[in-house]
Length: 348
Image (cartoon, rainbow, N blue to C red; front, side):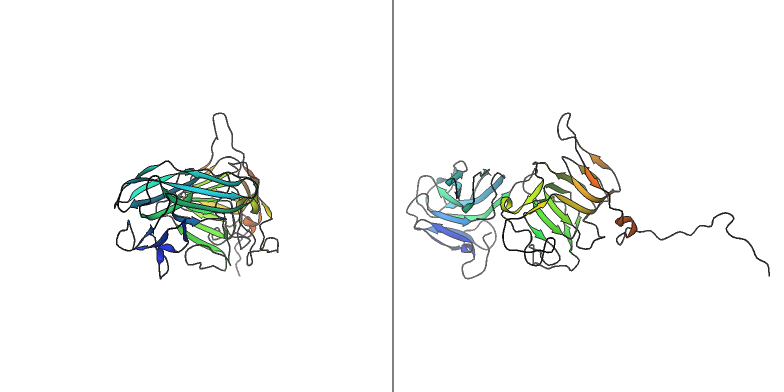
């Protein structure tokens, strides 16, 4: 649904294009308590739009969808993404026209691969019609970065640390330990900096593209899972985490890097995963993962070819301190054994 804070929930984070007015509709809705309706449209391009500046990266694939309806007459609708770049000017991408019915929500959807040069000073997406200026209602809107497996749970271009948690209620953990229960879903993690330990349950995790990841407590694991872990690092050729390219500040206040925090997006970080990676299932390696630490699996550690005749390269630097100072749960109770000839009976 189009939920949000009062007094007019659906209009939060949305703005009108052209002469139309946006308001809540608590009667005609696809799901949730409200839909969003644009009235007083003077042009077919007038309608609801959302500003996603700073959240869309050039060259990545985005899936977009919305449930849309007209009020009085049938029409066709589409979604348009518009980028204003410091070098290329104004660029637009649109989905194909698709049927929109009067009084009945229909799905508009498609894929965008926006590409531009320079800095994106504005990125918006909007819903429009082809033939009429009838009132236009929308609900259940989504613009989501695509992974190799489509729509999944994602941690993309984020910072996660003992002092920084952008998800849910934002509750933090002083040791940077966060538990994610996928409940049968999939987790995609990329272009992210983590200072902490993730425990991923009940679903496979894909760590791909590039990350900079180390536990907040030096001898703790980085990633634990009771299902499959897939290391696809380097699949896009990335060798560093680049703030400017990702439109993300990876060393904000409270999560310094090498003792330094700032508010800019000018820094780079080497592609790296440091710590123990452990799965009670399989760990699969593809492309060129880089690890400082230890990889453990109850089942198999598998190197998968990337194409016919291709190879995967796993750069691993073994860190012995995980053996000398193993984290909780990775030690066994010492077993005392007697060496032959080292004990004798003494009779007083």
